[in-house]
Image (cartoon, rainbow over all chains, first blue to last red; front, side):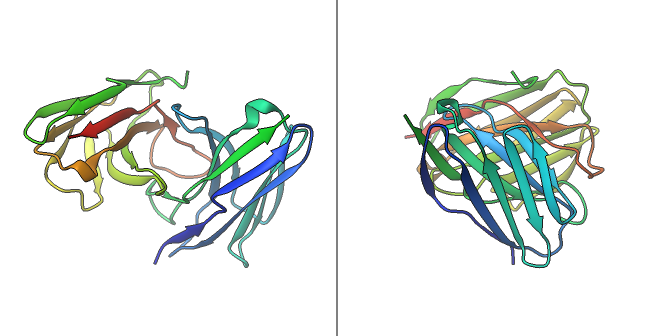
Length: 110
Length: 115
């Protein structure tokens, strides 16, 4: 079966650090993606991991452990504009039939 | 702006109506996708087209009918929908289906309400 879990909602304070977790059980794995989606807008690409370890990109970092079926997205120096939903998606071994998690709605408070 | 546009942005239709959603990508991509996003549910892939040929149909009911006349345009024809079909319908494109860190670029979606 295909299953991806993420916390439904998280709240953090401006300037803080927040970690959004994603666990997956999928039939095959060929990369994990994180997307950001503001209300009423298109999801936009944030990061990609296919090997274990940490990928850093400015204020955002993403970590992957394939043996544990686990990833997290780390957001540093939070800004109000980071309030959005964050979607975790796993690509299967072949093709582009991504499996998406339910998304985590992050609220950044002043 | 992601280079993928969708029209209309909002649509209200009755169960007996026929309507079409349109997607256009200006990125020179070869693969296009339709997704359904319902409240509190994950994004669900509906259809995939690569070089105008349909490569995936995720057991979507026949009341949804896709059309891809060329690599830049994708349509979703709707007829005799049900209220549970109310959702955000997202179009996406990617360079191809090859994989790697190739990501998909999403349009802003059409918010559909079926009465």
